[in-house]
Amino acid sequence: MKNLLSAGIVAIFCLLTSTDLSGQTENKSAAPDPDKMTVYYMAMLKSGPVRDHDSATAAKIQEAHMGHIMKMAAEKKLVLAGPFLDNGELRGIFIFNVASREEAEALTNQDPAVQAGRLVMEIHPWYGPAILKDIKWD
Image (cartoon, rainbow, N blue to C red):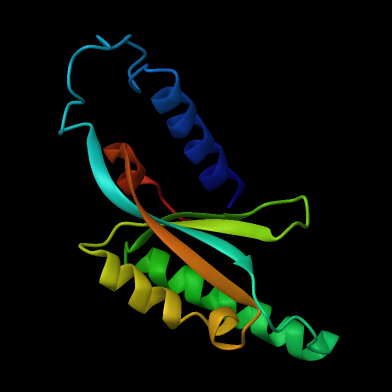
């Protein structure tokens, strides 16, 4: 998971600094190369309305949430996921590699933490580096 987060941070840094992943500076007036960029769906995971589960129940929900993450990753539908560490309302992110917002919403609604009300998700289309699809989860 640490390698996944590191790869994601590098890819996002390269995108934000207008440098492609081979290290070459892009012409800022040129349109992004569609072979290097693609549309993903980014889900912002936020604290949900039900946060009063006892610790044993919360642990079971978290274990099921992690199982759902690993299943989506194995199916190549999730390319990046991770928590924020400041314990605020924004809890983490998912970046989906799916064909539509509806598919991202369907996957989100299958998440046990969403079903239990511990998390809610806000989904946005995001144009990011195509290389994220190549990240390995092992």
